[in-house]
Length: 148
Image (tube, rainbow, N blue to C red; front, top):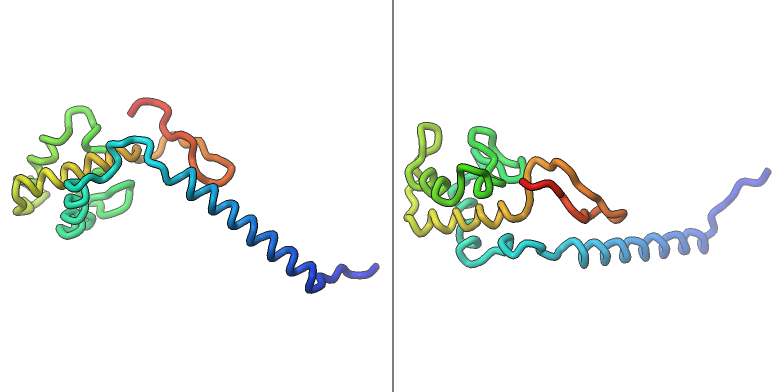
């Protein structure tokens, strides 16, 4: 029985096929998975300033977003949408601190910017993920069909 040998033409055909599949996959992923479904998730100027302050103040050393970051403070992904919490709650912590969280020494306007950033993050989804409906190309159709 003769062994099957891949000729240069076979290898070239396989390579071209794989490259075309990669291009199609990339096109589908980047055109369907990059739209923002909730306008609140769009960063306005205040949210952009808040994101920069979040980084500059190294909030990730203690807090998490989407489960990534420090473990000393709570995950802030959905703080704005949690019943009993919200913008005023977060702003009080940012301005005055607690026993475990230092007062950051920011102005009320800067605290508003951080709150705007956290509101934009809150609108992007829920952490931890409870349910996800994946498409064949690895993006998701819907997540958390139930109310938060």
